[in-house]
Length: 414
Image (cartoon, rainbow, N blue to C red; front, side):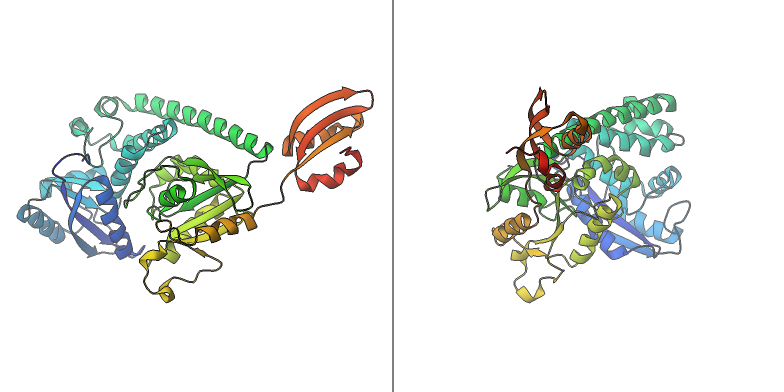
């Protein structure tokens, strides 16, 4: 349901605890996801089972309790904290008389409402179509109801009612378009590196305060609100450090437990901006009892993306919400801050500066023609400002990384 409607849909949350994850923590997160999607969480029911029921996810007795609860309190939505099959959705809706939405549909709905950039919209539509494609059979005429509401934003009924071949063609088209956007972003990233730009990427659990921190450090004017996935598209702004150097601060999409695999794949390209950054800030909400777990979620993702060789600075945000300093988590060399009050921001800036690599060197070189390999190395890892061919070789003015200075030392003129 769209957030601007006067009357919010009232939802009952349903958790099936099969022992595969922390059900209570996941249910608490589902409350926040529901609120972020624009619905009102009215209550929750949990059932422990060795596995989901094939027909209705929960047992028949629990299904009757859910139906009675929905009727008694006049609710109009069921949200299950798992992925449902089309058969389960159909049976649940028939038994309860109200719409049923699963966790994946809910997150897709939030992402669809948050995406602003062309790439973000492409990624969301791709994830939605991949999720819906295997579900087309068995939904039939029910698809005509899609197009507005929680778990239903996005591609729209005209696309969903076409055959599978048309949707597969659309998926191929979206994949190609996203590939083009990725290639363009990689070119920009390479250009930044060659020009000596240092990039600092913020990663972390959604609602950790990354957007507020971005605004506090750079005055970026990024939307910041107490809801999950408040901002979806990455934002980049210039950040001036205490020593005078300017770096590029990049905010990436927030993480969440059990993020649907369609979205992990779709937004991997966005998260790879962190993999290409020189320094990574792993931001978490220090006031959350789940803070260590949230840091681990981001840490594991960074490991998957191959960021093991980058400096990662744990940042404990929202320390102003913890009245007793002794209760703030002690996590390695984490920097304690409050993006809201400004406390600790100077220390954070100094820590970023302390983790910078040595700056590139601007030199003038005379390279013999026999050293064309070194010239290629300069172009690959540095940048060339000017060049001219002389009878003695290549005359270059270039910015080179410090580790190349030794090999080039005998060719440096000034």
